[in-house]
Length: 442
Image 1 (spheres, rainbow, N blue to C red):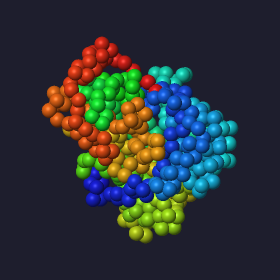
Image 2 (cartoon, one colour):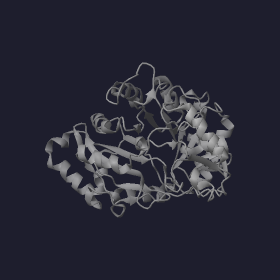
Image 3 (cartoon, rainbow, N blue to C red):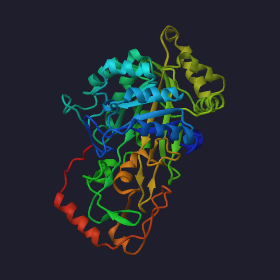
Image 4 (tube, one colour):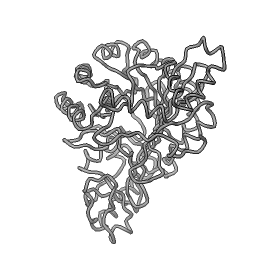
């Protein structure tokens, strides 16, 4: 399909209480800095017993299939092996998210023995990495090769991801081609569009009706950049891939919590060889796999235990016309019959969007919900809770005196009439004194 239509895709059936993913924030300590990072260093490493309680809560109230172990950098956490083993003993897949800097082969082997079921590397050109300064995404392929060499012997699903900025948007096809070349060991690639909280005179932020000091020292994703620096959409990435990557297409999605037309998660599963994609599977294959997993195992899933489905995926041709066309293309080339056939998922995630009235268009049935002080919150906005005890809502200064704070779309019941505009003038003065060009910090 050249135009994305929700009616032609499968909508993942996930919900708040029946969702395959549990997001676990184990530390806010990190060994690199990323532009727009969701996590500031405020607390350090968290107690193991507290994290175990959160895993139990995710299991009971989310019905999860995997735990995404995140941070900060999880490999800096001193009890990471014990945590992975605990999650594994509960029958849940521990899936580690890492920037790769500390991903030495020996620690990865240790975690694999403890039960680690999947590994995701986040590497992109806007990270501050010693020895890799001034590299673009193509220049960082050598680093990705190093991480892949450490991960390949583990025989677990392994993926690579980036945050998508204006500066690296056009290089996404280069990363896909690299993933195709290494399709035997790269089982997925993820592209997350950069989003930020805009800091500028005339905009104030309210939490439960009180003004908060929103600036680049408070949140890693606060910025004074021009809005066009963070408005790339999932549709944009989809059409870029359709233009440059033969055989690519999407099959399933999650929409937004506010807009009927937004694509927040856009997932495709491609079948191919190191020479290129043969073609995708269709929505019916994804639907059957989700339904079968829920029927047989009691949960939906986001990550398989097998690193690769291989030719098994062609069984979908029995009921999926798109998979049938992919299988026909495979059989039409006799040389492919002697080559290995592999699968690779391509995920595009459109981070939260702030609408003109201040509401936040989040991911519908957000997969990356985490636990904060005994309640579920969006992991990408948890620092707002850690800083101010709730979600921050932007309000135009001119409007604030005449109306209350708009519903931010998160259903937390915290919105209330706004205070006077005097604090906003002080906030605008502080922003003007700082000037443009301040860097975000993780």
